[in-house]
Length: 244
Length: 359
Image (cartoon, rainbow over all chains, first blue to last red; front, side):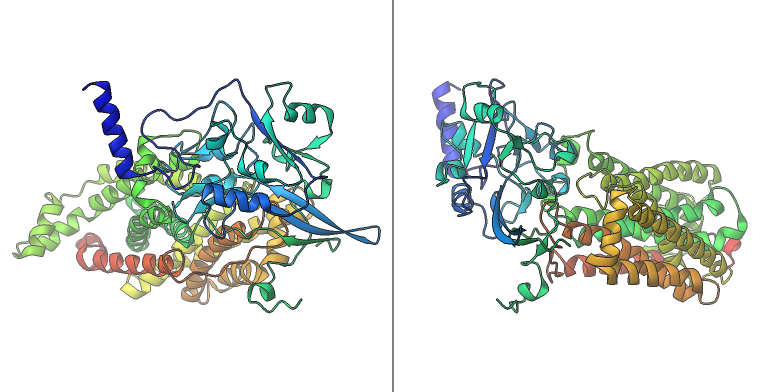
Protein backbone atom coordinates (compact mmCIF):
# COMPACT_ATOMS: atom_id res chain seq x y z
CA UNK A 1 0.00 0.00 0.00
CA UNK A 2 1.42 3.38 -0.90
CA UNK A 3 1.92 6.06 1.70
CA UNK A 4 -0.90 8.32 0.50
CA UNK A 5 -3.45 5.54 0.70
CA UNK A 6 -2.25 4.54 4.16
CA UNK A 7 -2.53 8.12 5.39
CA UNK A 8 -6.00 8.43 3.89
CA UNK A 9 -7.13 5.26 5.67
CA UNK A 10 -5.59 6.47 8.93
CA UNK A 11 -7.47 9.77 8.56
CA UNK A 12 -10.72 8.00 7.72
CA UNK A 13 -10.35 5.71 10.73
CA UNK A 14 -9.68 8.69 12.99
CA UNK A 15 -12.73 10.50 11.62
CA UNK A 16 -14.94 7.47 12.26
CA UNK A 17 -13.56 6.49 15.63
CA UNK A 18 -13.16 10.03 16.92
CA UNK A 19 -10.66 10.99 19.61
CA UNK A 20 -9.08 8.03 21.37
CA UNK A 21 -9.64 9.39 24.83
CA UNK A 22 -11.93 11.81 26.61
CA UNK A 23 -9.26 13.88 28.29
CA UNK A 24 -5.70 14.53 27.28
CA UNK A 25 -4.57 12.51 30.30
CA UNK A 26 -4.83 9.52 28.02
CA UNK A 27 -2.91 8.33 25.04
CA UNK A 28 -3.79 5.76 22.44
CA UNK A 29 -2.37 2.39 23.41
CA UNK A 30 -1.52 1.41 19.87
CA UNK A 31 1.87 2.41 18.57
CA UNK A 32 4.63 4.35 20.22
CA UNK A 33 3.77 6.20 23.41
CA UNK A 34 4.58 9.91 23.49
CA UNK A 35 7.74 10.19 25.58
CA UNK A 36 8.70 13.85 25.28
CA UNK A 37 12.23 15.12 25.04
CA UNK A 38 14.85 14.48 27.68
CA UNK A 39 16.29 17.91 26.99
CA UNK A 40 13.38 19.41 28.96
CA UNK A 41 12.29 19.02 32.59
CA UNK A 42 8.94 20.71 32.99
CA UNK A 43 8.13 22.14 36.40
CA UNK A 44 5.91 24.70 38.06
CA UNK A 45 6.54 27.39 40.63
CA UNK A 46 3.54 28.54 42.65
CA UNK A 47 4.16 31.93 44.22
CA UNK A 48 1.69 31.97 47.09
CA UNK A 49 2.33 35.66 47.67
CA UNK A 50 0.53 36.34 44.42
CA UNK A 51 -2.31 33.81 44.63
CA UNK A 52 -5.68 35.38 45.48
CA UNK A 53 -7.60 32.08 45.62
CA UNK A 54 -9.94 33.06 42.78
CA UNK A 55 -10.15 29.46 41.44
CA UNK A 56 -9.74 30.70 37.85
CA UNK A 57 -7.11 27.98 37.45
CA UNK A 58 -9.58 25.37 38.74
CA UNK A 59 -12.19 26.43 36.20
CA UNK A 60 -9.73 26.78 33.30
CA UNK A 61 -8.36 23.30 33.96
CA UNK A 62 -11.85 21.81 34.07
CA UNK A 63 -12.78 23.46 30.78
CA UNK A 64 -9.52 22.68 29.00
CA UNK A 65 -9.40 19.04 30.01
CA UNK A 66 -13.11 18.19 30.06
CA UNK A 67 -12.83 17.19 33.71
CA UNK A 68 -16.20 15.75 34.84
CA UNK A 69 -18.30 17.78 37.25
CA UNK A 70 -17.25 17.28 40.86
CA UNK A 71 -13.75 16.07 39.93
CA UNK A 72 -10.66 18.26 39.89
CA UNK A 73 -7.19 18.00 38.42
CA UNK A 74 -6.31 21.14 40.33
CA UNK A 75 -7.97 23.18 43.05
CA UNK A 76 -7.02 25.98 45.38
CA UNK A 77 -7.44 24.81 48.96
CA UNK A 78 -8.56 27.59 51.23
CA UNK A 79 -7.88 27.89 54.95
CA UNK A 80 -8.50 30.35 57.74
CA UNK A 81 -5.61 30.68 60.14
CA UNK A 82 -5.37 32.41 63.47
CA UNK A 83 -2.15 34.36 63.72
CA UNK A 84 -1.45 36.53 66.76
CA UNK A 85 -5.14 37.18 67.40
CA UNK A 86 -5.73 37.97 63.75
CA UNK A 87 -7.53 35.76 61.30
CA UNK A 88 -5.77 35.37 57.96
CA UNK A 89 -6.72 33.57 54.79
CA UNK A 90 -4.31 30.98 53.37
CA UNK A 91 -4.63 29.68 49.83
CA UNK A 92 -2.83 26.64 48.47
CA UNK A 93 -3.16 25.59 44.81
CA UNK A 94 -2.87 21.80 44.58
CA UNK A 95 -2.16 19.66 41.54
CA UNK A 96 -0.12 16.64 40.49
CA UNK A 97 3.48 17.30 41.49
CA UNK A 98 4.99 15.36 38.56
CA UNK A 99 7.46 13.97 41.06
CA UNK A 100 10.99 13.04 40.14
CA UNK A 101 10.32 9.85 42.09
CA UNK A 102 6.60 9.27 41.42
CA UNK A 103 5.12 6.58 43.71
CA UNK A 104 2.13 6.18 41.39
CA UNK A 105 4.24 4.72 38.58
CA UNK A 106 5.73 1.53 40.09
CA UNK A 107 2.45 0.41 41.67
CA UNK A 108 0.52 0.42 38.37
CA UNK A 109 0.03 -3.28 37.59
CA UNK A 110 -0.26 -2.78 33.83
CA UNK A 111 2.24 0.02 33.18
CA UNK A 112 -0.55 2.42 32.19
CA UNK A 113 0.85 5.30 34.19
CA UNK A 114 4.36 6.33 33.24
CA UNK A 115 6.81 9.19 33.35
CA UNK A 116 7.87 10.81 30.12
CA UNK A 117 11.46 11.82 29.44
CA UNK A 118 10.51 15.43 30.13
CA UNK A 119 9.32 14.49 33.64
CA UNK A 120 5.57 14.72 33.02
CA UNK A 121 3.66 11.81 34.55
CA UNK A 122 0.79 10.68 32.33
CA UNK A 123 -1.84 7.95 32.21
CA UNK A 124 -2.53 5.78 29.19
CA UNK A 125 -6.24 5.69 29.87
CA UNK A 126 -6.89 3.07 27.23
CA UNK A 127 -4.58 0.61 28.95
CA UNK A 128 -5.61 1.58 32.50
CA UNK A 129 -7.77 -1.11 34.14
CA UNK A 130 -9.10 1.34 36.74
CA UNK A 131 -7.74 -0.63 39.68
CA UNK A 132 -7.18 2.57 41.66
CA UNK A 133 -3.79 1.48 43.03
CA UNK A 134 -2.17 4.73 41.78
CA UNK A 135 -4.93 6.73 43.48
CA UNK A 136 -3.92 5.08 46.76
CA UNK A 137 -0.19 5.59 46.15
CA UNK A 138 -0.31 9.31 45.28
CA UNK A 139 0.69 11.30 48.41
CA UNK A 140 -1.10 14.43 47.19
CA UNK A 141 -4.66 13.16 46.62
CA UNK A 142 -4.04 14.37 43.08
CA UNK A 143 -5.49 11.34 41.28
CA UNK A 144 -9.04 10.13 40.90
CA UNK A 145 -11.05 7.68 38.86
CA UNK A 146 -12.69 9.61 36.02
CA UNK A 147 -16.35 8.57 36.00
CA UNK A 148 -16.53 9.04 32.21
CA UNK A 149 -13.45 7.09 31.19
CA UNK A 150 -13.52 4.81 34.27
CA UNK A 151 -9.74 5.18 34.28
CA UNK A 152 -7.23 6.99 36.48
CA UNK A 153 -7.05 10.72 35.80
CA UNK A 154 -4.85 13.59 36.93
CA UNK A 155 -3.13 16.81 35.90
CA UNK A 156 -0.84 16.40 32.89
CA UNK A 157 0.69 19.88 33.02
CA UNK A 158 -1.58 20.27 29.95
CA UNK A 159 0.96 18.28 27.97
CA UNK A 160 -1.06 18.67 24.78
CA UNK A 161 -0.70 22.44 25.07
CA UNK A 162 2.95 22.30 26.12
CA UNK A 163 3.78 20.21 23.06
CA UNK A 164 2.08 22.87 20.94
CA UNK A 165 4.24 25.56 22.54
CA UNK A 166 1.49 26.84 24.84
CA UNK A 167 1.33 27.20 28.60
CA UNK A 168 -0.85 24.94 30.79
CA UNK A 169 -4.40 26.32 31.03
CA UNK A 170 -4.08 27.09 34.75
CA UNK A 171 -0.91 29.12 34.15
CA UNK A 172 -2.39 30.95 31.18
CA UNK A 173 -5.43 32.01 33.18
CA UNK A 174 -3.83 32.89 36.52
CA UNK A 175 -4.72 36.54 37.11
CA UNK A 176 -2.04 37.18 39.69
CA UNK A 177 0.71 35.41 37.78
CA UNK A 178 1.11 33.07 40.74
CA UNK A 179 1.62 29.96 38.62
CA UNK A 180 4.81 29.97 36.60
CA UNK A 181 5.61 27.09 34.28
CA UNK A 182 8.80 26.27 32.48
CA UNK A 183 11.83 24.13 31.81
CA UNK A 184 14.21 23.47 34.68
CA UNK A 185 16.85 22.28 32.24
CA UNK A 186 16.94 25.74 30.73
CA UNK A 187 19.00 27.82 33.17
CA UNK A 188 17.52 31.04 31.76
CA UNK A 189 13.90 30.02 32.22
CA UNK A 190 11.82 31.88 34.80
CA UNK A 191 11.23 28.72 36.82
CA UNK A 192 14.96 27.98 36.93
CA UNK A 193 15.70 31.50 38.13
CA UNK A 194 12.93 31.47 40.72
CA UNK A 195 13.97 28.08 42.10
CA UNK A 196 17.59 29.26 42.27
CA UNK A 197 16.90 32.68 43.77
CA UNK A 198 13.94 32.20 46.11
CA UNK A 199 13.48 29.84 49.04
CA UNK A 200 10.95 27.25 47.86
CA UNK A 201 9.23 24.27 49.48
CA UNK A 202 7.59 21.15 48.11
CA UNK A 203 4.59 19.37 49.56
CA UNK A 204 4.99 16.29 51.76
CA UNK A 205 8.81 16.18 51.76
CA UNK A 206 8.68 13.18 54.14
CA UNK A 207 7.47 11.06 51.21
CA UNK A 208 10.77 11.65 49.38
CA UNK A 209 9.00 11.95 46.06
CA UNK A 210 10.96 15.04 44.95
CA UNK A 211 7.91 16.99 43.76
CA UNK A 212 8.41 19.33 40.82
CA UNK A 213 5.87 21.91 41.92
CA UNK A 214 7.79 24.46 43.96
CA UNK A 215 5.96 26.75 46.37
CA UNK A 216 7.14 30.21 47.34
CA UNK A 217 5.90 31.41 50.72
CA UNK A 218 4.48 28.11 51.93
CA UNK A 219 3.80 27.93 55.66
CA UNK A 220 5.23 24.72 57.16
CA UNK A 221 1.86 23.85 58.71
CA UNK A 222 0.46 23.33 55.23
CA UNK A 223 3.37 21.36 53.82
CA UNK A 224 2.12 17.94 54.92
CA UNK A 225 -1.32 16.76 56.00
CA UNK A 226 -3.10 19.81 57.36
CA UNK A 227 -4.17 19.34 60.94
CA UNK A 228 -7.09 21.65 61.11
CA UNK A 229 -10.77 21.85 61.67
CA UNK A 230 -12.73 20.68 58.67
CA UNK A 231 -15.90 22.53 57.88
CA UNK A 232 -17.08 20.95 54.66
CA UNK A 233 -16.98 17.34 55.73
CA UNK A 234 -19.13 17.68 58.82
CA UNK A 235 -22.27 15.62 58.64
CA UNK A 236 -24.35 18.74 59.15
CA UNK A 237 -22.69 20.35 56.13
CA UNK A 238 -23.22 17.29 53.96
CA UNK A 239 -26.90 17.14 54.77
CA UNK A 240 -27.38 20.85 54.26
CA UNK A 241 -28.05 21.63 57.90
CA UNK A 242 -24.80 23.42 58.52
CA UNK A 243 -25.95 26.77 59.80
CA UNK A 244 -23.96 29.77 58.63
CA UNK B 1 -7.53 18.80 66.14
CA UNK B 2 -5.93 22.18 65.67
CA UNK B 3 -8.45 24.93 66.23
CA UNK B 4 -6.12 27.51 64.75
CA UNK B 5 -6.62 26.25 61.21
CA UNK B 6 -10.05 26.00 59.63
CA UNK B 7 -10.34 24.33 56.24
CA UNK B 8 -12.80 26.24 54.07
CA UNK B 9 -12.34 24.84 50.56
CA UNK B 10 -10.99 21.46 49.51
CA UNK B 11 -12.11 18.36 47.64
CA UNK B 12 -13.64 15.25 49.21
CA UNK B 13 -12.32 12.27 47.28
CA UNK B 14 -14.40 9.21 46.50
CA UNK B 15 -13.04 5.81 47.46
CA UNK B 16 -11.17 4.22 44.54
CA UNK B 17 -11.25 0.71 46.03
CA UNK B 18 -14.92 -0.15 46.23
CA UNK B 19 -16.91 -2.52 48.48
CA UNK B 20 -16.17 -5.21 45.84
CA UNK B 21 -12.56 -4.97 47.00
CA UNK B 22 -13.59 -5.49 50.61
CA UNK B 23 -15.49 -8.58 49.53
CA UNK B 24 -12.48 -9.87 47.61
CA UNK B 25 -10.08 -9.48 50.52
CA UNK B 26 -12.67 -11.00 52.85
CA UNK B 27 -13.47 -14.00 50.66
CA UNK B 28 -9.92 -14.78 49.59
CA UNK B 29 -8.85 -14.62 53.24
CA UNK B 30 -11.59 -17.05 54.23
CA UNK B 31 -10.59 -19.29 51.33
CA UNK B 32 -6.88 -19.59 52.01
CA UNK B 33 -7.38 -19.91 55.76
CA UNK B 34 -10.03 -22.61 55.32
CA UNK B 35 -7.74 -24.38 52.88
CA UNK B 36 -4.98 -24.49 55.51
CA UNK B 37 -7.50 -26.04 57.93
CA UNK B 38 -7.90 -28.96 55.50
CA UNK B 39 -4.19 -29.79 55.43
CA UNK B 40 -3.96 -31.81 58.68
CA UNK B 41 -6.53 -34.31 57.40
CA UNK B 42 -5.83 -34.49 53.68
CA UNK B 43 -2.07 -33.95 53.51
CA UNK B 44 -0.79 -34.98 56.94
CA UNK B 45 -3.32 -37.82 57.45
CA UNK B 46 -4.56 -36.75 60.87
CA UNK B 47 -7.85 -38.64 60.94
CA UNK B 48 -9.27 -36.64 63.85
CA UNK B 49 -9.32 -33.57 61.56
CA UNK B 50 -11.39 -35.33 58.86
CA UNK B 51 -14.82 -33.91 59.68
CA UNK B 52 -13.49 -30.38 60.04
CA UNK B 53 -11.50 -30.67 56.82
CA UNK B 54 -14.50 -31.58 54.69
CA UNK B 55 -16.47 -28.55 55.85
CA UNK B 56 -13.42 -26.30 55.54
CA UNK B 57 -12.87 -27.49 51.98
CA UNK B 58 -16.40 -26.37 51.06
CA UNK B 59 -15.60 -22.94 52.55
CA UNK B 60 -12.24 -22.75 50.75
CA UNK B 61 -13.72 -23.76 47.42
CA UNK B 62 -16.87 -21.62 47.50
CA UNK B 63 -15.07 -18.49 48.74
CA UNK B 64 -12.04 -19.11 46.52
CA UNK B 65 -14.13 -19.18 43.35
CA UNK B 66 -16.26 -16.12 44.17
CA UNK B 67 -13.31 -13.99 45.36
CA UNK B 68 -11.66 -13.40 41.94
CA UNK B 69 -15.03 -12.43 40.48
CA UNK B 70 -15.38 -9.75 43.17
CA UNK B 71 -11.83 -8.61 42.41
CA UNK B 72 -12.47 -8.21 38.69
CA UNK B 73 -15.68 -6.33 39.49
CA UNK B 74 -13.65 -3.96 41.67
CA UNK B 75 -11.76 -2.81 38.56
CA UNK B 76 -13.40 0.20 36.98
CA UNK B 77 -12.55 -1.33 33.61
CA UNK B 78 -13.17 -5.04 34.27
CA UNK B 79 -13.18 -5.95 30.56
CA UNK B 80 -9.52 -4.88 30.37
CA UNK B 81 -8.34 -7.44 32.94
CA UNK B 82 -6.27 -9.10 30.19
CA UNK B 83 -3.88 -6.12 30.39
CA UNK B 84 -2.55 -7.70 33.61
CA UNK B 85 -1.11 -10.46 31.41
CA UNK B 86 -0.19 -8.34 28.36
CA UNK B 87 1.76 -5.78 30.38
CA UNK B 88 3.40 -7.50 33.33
CA UNK B 89 4.89 -5.00 35.82
CA UNK B 90 7.18 -6.73 38.33
CA UNK B 91 7.47 -3.56 40.45
CA UNK B 92 3.79 -3.81 41.37
CA UNK B 93 2.51 -6.25 44.00
CA UNK B 94 -0.84 -6.19 42.28
CA UNK B 95 0.80 -7.48 39.11
CA UNK B 96 2.30 -10.39 41.08
CA UNK B 97 -1.11 -11.00 42.62
CA UNK B 98 -2.64 -11.37 39.18
CA UNK B 99 -0.50 -14.51 38.82
CA UNK B 100 -0.65 -15.83 42.38
CA UNK B 101 -4.45 -15.68 42.50
CA UNK B 102 -5.35 -17.81 39.45
CA UNK B 103 -2.60 -20.30 40.33
CA UNK B 104 -4.06 -20.63 43.83
CA UNK B 105 -7.64 -21.03 42.62
CA UNK B 106 -6.67 -23.60 39.96
CA UNK B 107 -4.55 -25.58 42.44
CA UNK B 108 -7.40 -25.45 44.97
CA UNK B 109 -9.86 -26.78 42.40
CA UNK B 110 -7.46 -29.58 41.45
CA UNK B 111 -6.95 -30.41 45.14
CA UNK B 112 -10.72 -30.56 45.75
CA UNK B 113 -11.22 -32.66 42.65
CA UNK B 114 -8.62 -35.20 43.78
CA UNK B 115 -10.34 -35.42 47.17
CA UNK B 116 -13.83 -35.70 45.68
CA UNK B 117 -12.94 -38.31 43.01
CA UNK B 118 -13.71 -41.45 45.04
CA UNK B 119 -16.95 -39.86 46.24
CA UNK B 120 -17.91 -38.94 42.68
CA UNK B 121 -17.34 -42.55 41.57
CA UNK B 122 -19.49 -43.78 44.46
CA UNK B 123 -22.13 -41.20 43.53
CA UNK B 124 -22.18 -42.48 39.93
CA UNK B 125 -22.23 -46.12 41.04
CA UNK B 126 -24.07 -48.28 38.56
CA UNK B 127 -26.76 -45.65 38.16
CA UNK B 128 -27.92 -44.09 34.94
CA UNK B 129 -29.11 -40.57 34.28
CA UNK B 130 -27.35 -37.34 33.44
CA UNK B 131 -26.02 -36.50 36.92
CA UNK B 132 -24.58 -39.99 37.33
CA UNK B 133 -22.94 -39.75 33.91
CA UNK B 134 -21.39 -36.37 34.77
CA UNK B 135 -20.18 -37.75 38.12
CA UNK B 136 -18.65 -40.76 36.34
CA UNK B 137 -16.81 -38.53 33.86
CA UNK B 138 -15.59 -36.21 36.64
CA UNK B 139 -14.46 -39.15 38.77
CA UNK B 140 -12.09 -40.34 36.04
CA UNK B 141 -12.05 -43.84 37.46
CA UNK B 142 -12.46 -42.61 41.00
CA UNK B 143 -9.45 -44.31 42.58
CA UNK B 144 -8.15 -42.50 45.60
CA UNK B 145 -4.78 -40.85 44.87
CA UNK B 146 -3.30 -39.95 48.25
CA UNK B 147 0.11 -39.08 46.84
CA UNK B 148 -1.43 -36.73 44.27
CA UNK B 149 -3.54 -35.13 47.00
CA UNK B 150 -0.40 -34.53 49.03
CA UNK B 151 1.55 -33.07 46.12
CA UNK B 152 -1.26 -30.83 44.88
CA UNK B 153 -2.03 -29.91 48.51
CA UNK B 154 1.53 -28.73 49.01
CA UNK B 155 1.48 -26.79 45.73
CA UNK B 156 -1.80 -25.17 46.78
CA UNK B 157 -0.29 -24.35 50.17
CA UNK B 158 2.58 -22.49 48.50
CA UNK B 159 0.13 -20.59 46.28
CA UNK B 160 -2.08 -19.84 49.31
CA UNK B 161 0.92 -18.48 51.22
CA UNK B 162 1.74 -16.23 48.27
CA UNK B 163 -1.86 -15.00 48.15
CA UNK B 164 -1.81 -14.32 51.90
CA UNK B 165 1.48 -12.48 51.46
CA UNK B 166 0.48 -10.33 48.51
CA UNK B 167 -2.97 -9.36 49.79
CA UNK B 168 -1.41 -7.96 52.95
CA UNK B 169 1.76 -6.49 51.47
CA UNK B 170 -0.10 -4.87 48.56
CA UNK B 171 -1.66 -2.51 51.10
CA UNK B 172 1.25 -2.34 53.52
CA UNK B 173 3.63 -0.97 50.87
CA UNK B 174 1.45 2.07 50.19
CA UNK B 175 3.52 4.55 52.19
CA UNK B 176 1.14 7.42 51.59
CA UNK B 177 -1.78 5.66 53.26
CA UNK B 178 -0.19 5.85 56.70
CA UNK B 179 -2.83 3.56 58.22
CA UNK B 180 -1.92 0.72 55.85
CA UNK B 181 1.84 1.23 55.88
CA UNK B 182 2.71 -1.24 58.59
CA UNK B 183 3.81 -4.87 59.01
CA UNK B 184 0.82 -5.28 61.34
CA UNK B 185 -1.49 -5.03 58.35
CA UNK B 186 -0.68 -8.37 56.65
CA UNK B 187 -0.49 -10.11 60.04
CA UNK B 188 -3.91 -8.86 61.11
CA UNK B 189 -5.36 -9.91 57.78
CA UNK B 190 -4.02 -13.42 58.33
CA UNK B 191 -5.19 -13.88 61.93
CA UNK B 192 -8.66 -12.50 61.18
CA UNK B 193 -8.87 -14.64 58.04
CA UNK B 194 -8.29 -17.77 60.15
CA UNK B 195 -10.78 -16.69 62.82
CA UNK B 196 -13.37 -15.93 60.12
CA UNK B 197 -12.74 -19.17 58.22
CA UNK B 198 -13.09 -21.24 61.39
CA UNK B 199 -16.22 -19.27 62.28
CA UNK B 200 -17.80 -19.86 58.88
CA UNK B 201 -16.85 -23.56 59.01
CA UNK B 202 -18.56 -23.79 62.40
CA UNK B 203 -21.75 -22.25 61.04
CA UNK B 204 -21.73 -24.30 57.84
CA UNK B 205 -20.86 -27.51 59.66
CA UNK B 206 -23.88 -27.09 61.91
CA UNK B 207 -26.10 -26.10 58.98
CA UNK B 208 -25.03 -29.03 56.84
CA UNK B 209 -25.03 -31.55 59.66
CA UNK B 210 -21.32 -32.27 59.79
CA UNK B 211 -19.72 -34.30 62.58
CA UNK B 212 -20.36 -32.70 65.99
CA UNK B 213 -16.73 -33.27 67.04
CA UNK B 214 -15.59 -30.54 64.64
CA UNK B 215 -17.21 -27.80 66.71
CA UNK B 216 -14.77 -27.89 69.61
CA UNK B 217 -11.74 -27.95 67.34
CA UNK B 218 -13.02 -25.02 65.25
CA UNK B 219 -13.98 -23.08 68.39
CA UNK B 220 -10.38 -23.46 69.56
CA UNK B 221 -9.16 -22.00 66.25
CA UNK B 222 -11.61 -19.08 66.63
CA UNK B 223 -10.40 -18.42 70.19
CA UNK B 224 -6.70 -18.73 69.35
CA UNK B 225 -6.91 -16.46 66.31
CA UNK B 226 -9.11 -13.89 68.08
CA UNK B 227 -6.62 -13.83 70.95
CA UNK B 228 -3.73 -13.38 68.55
CA UNK B 229 -5.61 -10.60 66.75
CA UNK B 230 -6.14 -8.79 70.06
CA UNK B 231 -2.44 -9.01 70.92
CA UNK B 232 -1.48 -7.69 67.49
CA UNK B 233 -4.05 -4.88 67.65
CA UNK B 234 -2.85 -3.92 71.13
CA UNK B 235 0.78 -3.86 69.95
CA UNK B 236 -0.18 -1.80 66.90
CA UNK B 237 -2.14 0.78 68.89
CA UNK B 238 0.48 0.97 71.63
CA UNK B 239 3.22 1.45 69.05
CA UNK B 240 1.13 4.32 67.75
CA UNK B 241 0.57 5.72 71.23
CA UNK B 242 4.29 5.81 72.01
CA UNK B 243 5.31 7.19 68.63
CA UNK B 244 6.98 4.05 67.28
CA UNK B 245 4.53 3.58 64.44
CA UNK B 246 2.87 6.26 62.31
CA UNK B 247 0.40 3.62 61.13
CA UNK B 248 -0.42 2.77 64.74
CA UNK B 249 -0.96 6.46 65.51
CA UNK B 250 -3.44 6.76 62.62
CA UNK B 251 -5.13 3.52 63.75
CA UNK B 252 -5.46 5.05 67.21
CA UNK B 253 -7.17 8.09 65.69
CA UNK B 254 -9.44 5.78 63.70
CA UNK B 255 -10.24 3.91 66.90
CA UNK B 256 -10.88 7.01 68.98
CA UNK B 257 -11.68 9.91 66.68
CA UNK B 258 -12.54 9.03 63.07
CA UNK B 259 -14.73 5.95 63.38
CA UNK B 260 -14.62 4.44 66.89
CA UNK B 261 -17.97 2.70 66.44
CA UNK B 262 -16.74 0.44 63.67
CA UNK B 263 -13.11 0.04 64.64
CA UNK B 264 -13.26 -0.18 68.41
CA UNK B 265 -16.74 -1.37 69.24
CA UNK B 266 -17.55 -3.61 66.30
CA UNK B 267 -14.17 -4.96 65.14
CA UNK B 268 -12.14 -5.07 68.35
CA UNK B 269 -15.07 -5.58 70.71
CA UNK B 270 -17.90 -7.55 69.14
CA UNK B 271 -15.81 -9.13 66.36
CA UNK B 272 -12.67 -10.10 68.30
CA UNK B 273 -12.98 -9.92 72.10
CA UNK B 274 -16.47 -11.43 72.36
CA UNK B 275 -15.61 -14.48 70.18
CA UNK B 276 -12.54 -15.06 72.36
CA UNK B 277 -14.69 -15.01 75.50
CA UNK B 278 -17.56 -17.06 74.10
CA UNK B 279 -15.69 -19.62 72.00
CA UNK B 280 -15.95 -22.41 74.56
CA UNK B 281 -19.52 -21.89 75.78
CA UNK B 282 -21.26 -20.60 72.67
CA UNK B 283 -19.10 -21.71 69.74
CA UNK B 284 -21.67 -20.94 67.06
CA UNK B 285 -22.21 -17.37 68.20
CA UNK B 286 -18.47 -16.92 68.63
CA UNK B 287 -17.93 -18.24 65.10
CA UNK B 288 -20.55 -15.91 63.63
CA UNK B 289 -19.07 -12.88 65.40
CA UNK B 290 -15.51 -13.82 64.40
CA UNK B 291 -16.69 -14.03 60.80
CA UNK B 292 -18.29 -10.59 61.12
CA UNK B 293 -15.13 -9.29 62.82
CA UNK B 294 -13.03 -10.47 59.90
CA UNK B 295 -15.27 -8.47 57.54
CA UNK B 296 -15.43 -5.40 59.81
CA UNK B 297 -11.63 -5.16 59.91
CA UNK B 298 -11.44 -5.21 56.13
CA UNK B 299 -14.24 -2.67 55.72
CA UNK B 300 -12.60 -0.43 58.30
CA UNK B 301 -9.15 -0.66 56.71
CA UNK B 302 -10.37 -0.33 53.14
CA UNK B 303 -13.19 2.14 53.21
CA UNK B 304 -12.27 4.14 56.32
CA UNK B 305 -8.60 4.03 55.30
CA UNK B 306 -9.52 5.81 52.08
CA UNK B 307 -11.57 8.38 53.99
CA UNK B 308 -8.49 9.80 55.72
CA UNK B 309 -7.25 12.72 53.59
CA UNK B 310 -3.57 12.65 52.66
CA UNK B 311 -3.21 16.42 52.51
CA UNK B 312 -6.38 18.02 53.82
CA UNK B 313 -8.08 18.09 57.19
CA UNK B 314 -10.88 15.92 58.55
CA UNK B 315 -12.36 12.62 57.41
CA UNK B 316 -14.06 12.29 54.01
CA UNK B 317 -17.76 11.41 54.10
CA UNK B 318 -18.89 8.05 52.74
CA UNK B 319 -22.34 6.70 52.17
CA UNK B 320 -22.78 3.25 50.70
CA UNK B 321 -24.22 3.78 47.21
CA UNK B 322 -27.11 1.46 46.36
CA UNK B 323 -25.81 0.55 42.88
CA UNK B 324 -22.89 -1.35 41.40
CA UNK B 325 -20.33 0.76 43.27
CA UNK B 326 -21.79 -0.14 46.66
CA UNK B 327 -24.59 -2.31 47.93
CA UNK B 328 -24.85 -4.33 44.70
CA UNK B 329 -21.26 -5.45 45.22
CA UNK B 330 -22.02 -6.71 48.71
CA UNK B 331 -25.31 -8.40 47.86
CA UNK B 332 -24.02 -9.73 44.52
CA UNK B 333 -21.02 -11.51 46.01
CA UNK B 334 -23.12 -12.90 48.83
CA UNK B 335 -25.72 -14.20 46.37
CA UNK B 336 -23.09 -15.75 44.16
CA UNK B 337 -21.46 -17.42 47.15
CA UNK B 338 -24.79 -18.87 48.34
CA UNK B 339 -25.47 -20.19 44.83
CA UNK B 340 -22.07 -21.81 44.65
CA UNK B 341 -22.45 -23.25 48.13
CA UNK B 342 -25.75 -24.83 47.13
CA UNK B 343 -24.19 -26.25 43.96
CA UNK B 344 -21.19 -27.70 45.82
CA UNK B 345 -23.21 -29.23 48.62
CA UNK B 346 -25.89 -30.53 46.23
CA UNK B 347 -23.78 -32.00 43.47
CA UNK B 348 -20.38 -32.78 44.94
CA UNK B 349 -19.60 -35.49 47.49
CA UNK B 350 -18.34 -32.88 49.93
CA UNK B 351 -18.66 -35.23 52.92
CA UNK B 352 -15.83 -37.28 51.46
CA UNK B 353 -15.32 -40.95 50.81
CA UNK B 354 -18.53 -42.60 52.17
CA UNK B 355 -16.97 -45.59 53.93
CA UNK B 356 -14.44 -43.38 55.71
CA UNK B 357 -16.66 -40.51 56.79
CA UNK B 358 -19.62 -42.66 57.63
CA UNK B 359 -22.37 -41.39 55.40
